[in-house]
Each structure stands twice: as C-alpha cells, then as structure tokens.
Image (cartoon, rainbow over all chains, first blue to last red):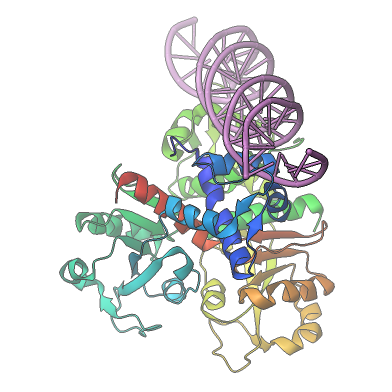
Length: 207
Length: 207
DNA sequence: TAGATTGTTAATCGATTAACAATC
DNA sequence: TAGATTGTTAATCGATTAACAATC
C-alpha cells in the first residue's frame, strides 16, 4: 500500500484526519480535492498527492468518500487502536493534560499519574501515585506511552527510568530536547517555540 | 539586513535561540556551526545558511560568539520586548498556561484571565474577570496577545470579539483552526496532531 | 453522453547539502 | 604561519504544482 511516506506528508495527516472528522460529524458524505484544498489552505494537487502516497481512494468525477477516507487515515496514523498513557508530573500541565478533551479522537487514554510530591490533589478521575512507586506499579498499568510534564532538570533521568521499564514512546513537555535510543520515539513539545514564531510574525506586521 | 526569510528557517529560529540560551547559561562563549549542528541534529551547512539569512555574525576560523548570536536572534524573533497577554478561559489549560515557566525566556507575560464562569479559582497570581467585563476591562490591560483556552464552539466568536477590541495576535488552543483577517496573526496549537505523528512513528517501529 | 475529478507523470520551485575561496 | 571555520556560490535533492489522460 504505502512505501516510504515523507515527513512533510505525515505532519499533514493529523490535520486531514481532524477535518474529515468534523465533515463526517456534519453529515457530509463526499468531498473533492478542490473543496478540501480551499477549506484547508492547500492546493488540490497537493491533497491528491498526499492521499495517494498511501493508496487510491478517490473516484474520478466524484471525489472522496468522507467516512472511508477518514477511517483509512485513522488506520494509517494508528489512532484506531487505544493507546494507554501514564502522565509523569501532576503539576498544572500534567493536570491539564489529564483532562484534555482532544485525546479520545486519537484513541489516547490517560490511565494514571505519578508525582514526586505525593500529597497533591488527585485531578480529574485519575489515580495519582508517588514517583517512588513507579517501578512497582507501572507493569500492571499496561501503558505504552509516557507524557513527561516535569521540570527540565530531572527529565532525561526520568525518561531513562521509564525506558528501563519498557516504555518506548514519549511525549515531552519539559523544556529540553530529550534523546532516546533508536527503538523508541520522542515528540518534544516546545510551546514557547510557537510563541517565537508568533512574535516574529507580529513584528513583520508591525503589531 | 534581512530580505525575505523562509518559513522553514523561521520555524528553526526558536530552537536555535533556546539552545544558545542554555549554552550561555553554562558559560560557553563560542561555538562553531559544526558543534552546533551535532548538538541540534542539523548539518553545519544548514546552520550557516540559516544564520546568514539575517546577517553575518561568525568569524572565520573561530565560529560564533554565543551571547552575540543569542541576543541577535532575540531581536530577530522580537522576543527582546515584553509581550503582554490575556488568557481567555480559566479551565485547566488556561490555568496551566497562566503558570507556564517557559514564557519569561521569550518575553511573554500573562496579565489577566477571563472566564464565562466567574466563580472559578483564581489561579497563580493573575486576576480573573468574568467574560462579560471583557469590553470594559481589556483596554486598560494594554495587552497585545490573546491566548484562547476555551472550547471549540465559541472560539471563532470570541476571537472576533477580541479582534474588535484591537487584539491582533492569537494563540489558539481550541481544537478548531481559526481564521483571522490579514492584519492579524493566529497560531493554532493542535496538541493532538503531535500525538498523531507519535502514533504513526510507533506503528512504524512496531511499538 | 458530457462534465467533473481523480491518479500520475512531468515541470517547477525551494530547501538542503557540498564545496571552496576568503580570512580570522 | 598553519589550521580552522566562516560566508557564499553551485549542485543536489525533495517537495509542491501543473498538466492531462483515464474514467467515474
């Protein structure tokens, strides 16, 4: 079905998926690359290229079946299966993520939180465990992803500790770039980088 | 100094800035494009190209002065000046952002929060006002950026309302893509898109 | 059928990498 | 000076756009 799909394409897939999801929820059955392009700010050509990088779904003279394409994108991204997550750090960011409503759409589910300060509020309805019980409890939780919502200083060490426990996927909110072995994945989320870009554009417009 | 700088370059600038900042705080005085490239996972060539797109700072045979380059990047990004922000929505994401430690580095400062439910906790040390007082209070707050940490449904409407009050820069955490007039800037932050990419990579590695 | 729109190849455009003279 | 490393031009690579035959 798909050979190598470039990074540039992969980064656009979640946006396609999201948009098709909303189309489906509005009852739209069909869409052409032209209309999709207009809504998403991309050229029809690019959309057809992107979609075709993982298989042919359109019908000439008609366009794409919204639900069919959405479901397929879901499988391509792997967000059709449930991903159980543990959240490390029960500070404000950790708590915000524990309650984030964007997860169900992509099949992600927070299962538990850990924090060095065991006396914190239990947010949402997730159990909160002290960090020292990590080794003891993690195996039973059956999670495949760890969210790091902790300060930068201990981040790399905590990641290594989770790696030793078998975690191979990390979503990092600590303000450092973390490195991991080749058999694991890290997505470093740098919120302030977005602000840098925003600031640059403001300057250009003289805001 | 700089003509047109491409989007691809601009998106890398905050990472350069962040890394130079940590180098400076470690007391590093000088760095070559070779070493910078190794640390950041870029080629020396690319780094020299990027830096030269906004002016020549290196010395042959020596490299770059860390502090000088950092300070210049700061000006290029416009993060040397203070940006006052208002946070709309005092839910968990709003509260997390109110306390986010990544802002000072980029000169951003949250000033106040607004929420439809006036009875919420006052988080951090920011004043929290009811949303209906927006028109009355915003002019005195002297903010140039609004963070939207509200549900998708009212997001576009709230943005239009802020635009009418003179706000021209938006950082949007609502899970919809917002559109704005050409004299304003929006950065749409889609956290779950990152998870889509993470999920795709996990699948590829068989995690 | 005629019109619309795909899948796909070819053309263009832009970004990254390589190379090297200039020079600190 | 000799060695290192820049700034910059040229070469390569990849991604986007255009075009169009295929076909629903």
